[in-house]
Image 1: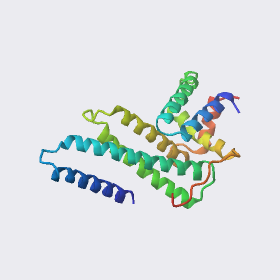
Image 2: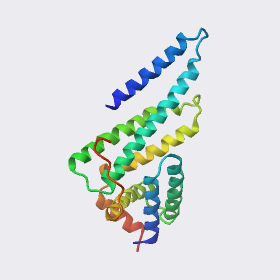
Image 3: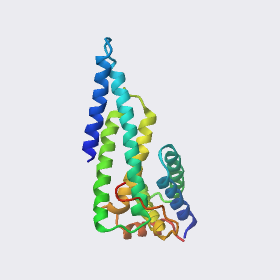
Length: 75
Length: 139
């Protein structure tokens, strides 16, 4: 996997796994990494690349051996 | 169900305010009460949204959900995002002046929108997303 893509996926994972103020900080890290990538892609839509990252993160998550515990249905 | 909880929370808040009025001869500070109530209820909504995000991670991101679960996922997140917009209208009012609360809400809006887009983004298919990433991240 491309190292920049992997770094973005891992940054997105931190956004997804954290809450509140911590999530805010993780989001800043993710956005600054995305900014760097987008500097080289002036013709590409930042929004589309960001949304594509969300899907790439999910694809990555499915491949992980260590999954968060399932929450019972009533939760 | 969410409407029921909102109505219950509002009723409890209202009754609490009424007790203050009845036990004190001074004119109640309605603005302060409304502000306090809004902050407390926003915190409750934050907890509810965080619960939804936990379910999203545990049952959808790291596992393959069924079609029926995906339908529930879509409806639940749509509702949560819509409520975020209602809450934003209340707390983003300049007179309310709670920028920290607003930014905490914005983070959740972003997380909920990402959760929604993971499965239900009609404008971008999985194949299109892969194509975009191939173009951006040439190996």
